[in-house]
Image 1 (tube, rainbow, N blue to C red):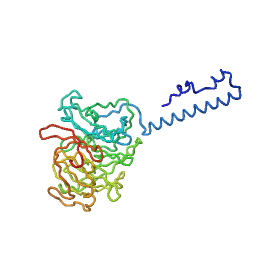
Image 2: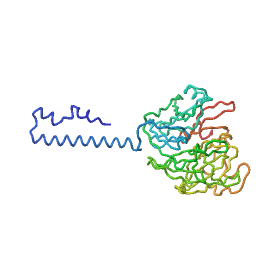
Image 3: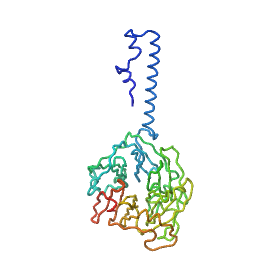
Length: 397
């Protein structure tokens, strides 16, 4: 920001008044230079205003966002961090000012849950990791944590594997409400409020924030596409339907647990997965506000399992969709296999069916985030109960 007073005090910025004192100006020249100086000041004011607009191109305001939960994290343009807050049925876009570019990073932290607890002054039993995301600019890892009393905490892990708390006080931010959230009085089979699933996963694509979750409609499985910068107006959701082959029925009330975006023959699709692990394609051009969209089920990957994350990674010349699961080993399926599967599962099946996929030797991967085109950050619960954070590549996961 330009300090206009400082500019006027600069010895090289000679005002008409100063020249007059030096008796070097006559009345006519005084008027000319006064106009010149006025024009210069106006130019500086306009330039300053342009700088302010550039700094605030995302319609941010300065303050402290009242974040009640951190259900999902995602990064947008210029390192803007999106925080999905199911408790508030809102998403906060925060300028975290982490813009120093890095090509990649390497993470390896044993007992990450213990390290997080120590950083927060508590024990590992009192913390749970709710999501994580890599800043694509700096390659720093951001981890969302819920403390024992429910308080959300945001931490960052740098390349030297040091944890640091991220303050959300007096930051530049904006927010948008999730339209038509689930009724807070309604609960799922486990007795948890359905409102906690108003946001299940997020991603950013083509200038829009994509949000999966539940809404307060008869067909409650929803997908939202919200323009960014936020307009202040909640945008209506599309509702989703799939045939769940393991269950042998069509379903409209189960939330998408995790999703990724891909292109097949020039057309973009949401690749989504649900509890009990069906894999479903939804054409993005059909996911319009107010629409009801039936997906094409291309795989069943096993019941009694909940996928936690999915990302695209490259291994050599191939691109794979990698999925983390809470109860089964991680899976990966090539983009080629997804693209060539033209059918859809419409009959009840036992076990697995549909698109071929590879079972990976990593069980209980509870968090997965893309580090770069070839690497991922993994949080895994080992057989001895330890929770470790490590870096993988396309071959090893």
